[in-house]
Image (cartoon, rainbow, N blue to C red; front, side, top):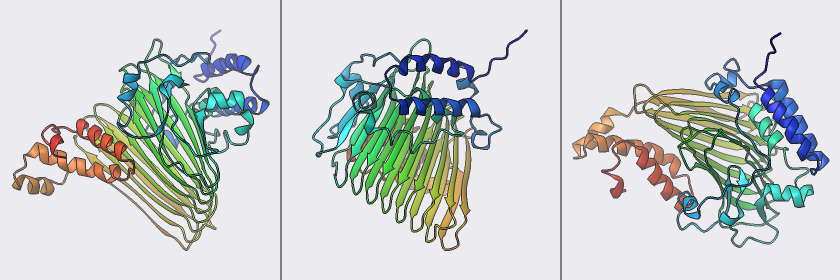
Length: 448
């Protein structure tokens, strides 16, 4: 008699084995969190193209691959000079480095932090002070009908914990650097970040995800951001994984009264990439600037899904995502803004623009608004096209060759997002990275 094996079974079996060891030392609330998450995963299963939110991204290659996961493994040792290549030059910041999802203390350092500010390994906090996380971990990121967030919660081991108490201002950025190395068999890591800003706190957070070699692996990351009343957060995410790797991330943001958040993402690497961003205005007066740039070539696939929930009145959200697609790459933007019935005086704008550098590149763009209130200012739009030939002709008429003209216009298209970065060293690095990936950039790189 044939036995049918579900694609979820290997993960369920792995969790059973993992839980037997973890339950010996973990607090009850964490065991309950894990059990609920794996139950939600078993209930929902992996998404398929029949699911509206996943119709553009096929996760079958992930579901059918047995990724290695060793909860007892520590961070592999890697030379410090390899890590330096993925930092931001002279930037003064506190930096936490994780290798294959595990904290690497010898590669990390903390600069001076205001009194009461905590920055460290989530694994260490869970071990030494689990009560600090009991009412926060899993509060913002839901695992219902979210298979990959559920897997992250079920198997979470390590990541970053950042807590800025009331009124404290962290003037220097905090850099979370996740480094992945390929191995046999291909491995999965579950980075988990928990960032808490209390009343009127301020901080700048940078998440970097990089690959040291060209082999395959799977990064399944979740970042929870709770930004309290009057707090200010500048958040950046840069993804430069191996182009044989799969990178799935879930960023969940909860904003309090009169809080201000600017979140900008850059996707330059990865073979198959999926980014989910969900934000909720929990109280009045909040503002959000949500921006993204995806720069794709070869057969890269990047799927960006955003959901902004205007649940309270007098909140503002400005969203701009841009894609530059070359060769046979595919970029997806699926955005939704929900303005609830009582969210009067909402101001929301959503824009997606895509630039195709190849006849074989493909862009899907689906911006959306659902408005249940009547006193609002809302707009959305999208464009997909190639470079303006009139603009190319204008530059050529000024003595610039065609290749350089096209590169300059493409660079200027990306510049609107790059210029949103307030951290100078990071902005300079992004300039260099974007230019290095554009065709014909050698002739103009030194002049910019």
